[in-house]
Length: 141
Image 1 (cartoon, rainbow, N blue to C red):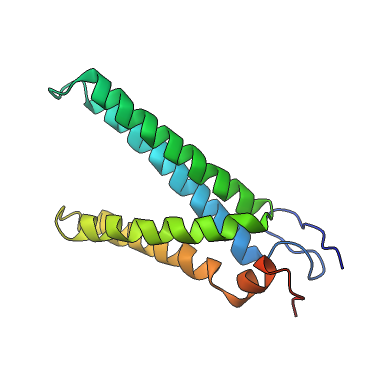
Image 2: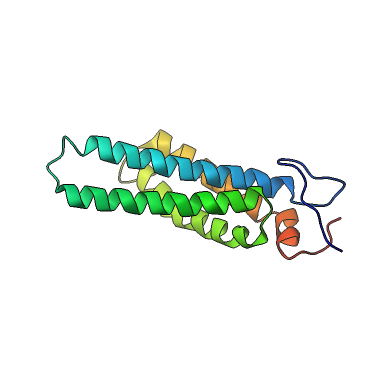
C-alpha cells in the first residue's frame, strides 16, 4: 500500500508522516538556525579577537556547511523522507557532548539544560514507536 504524505504537523486518516517525526524535523531545523546564528556571532566577535582572518573564515564556512546539512535533514523529516531519521538521531547523539560541555566546564548551566532538553526531546521523538514503524514503512495502527 502506498502512503500519502499528510500536511505539515498533521496525519491524514492514519497515513503519511507521524506528528512526532514532523515535530522532530522542526526541532532539527531549529538546530540548523542556531548553527547559523553561532556563525554570525563568530564572525562579528572575531573583529575584536587577535586571530588570523583565514582561520575565522574557515571555521565560519565549516559552521555554514554543517548548518546546511542539519537543515536539509530537518527538511527531510518535516516533508516525510524516511532517510532523514537516522542522520537526525546521529546529530542528537553528537550534540550530547555539547550539552555536557555547556553544563560542566563552561558553567553555562541554563543554556546547557535548555539545550539538553531540546536534544533529549528530539531524540525521544525520533525513537518513538510511531517514528520507528514509519521509518521501516510498516503498517501503523
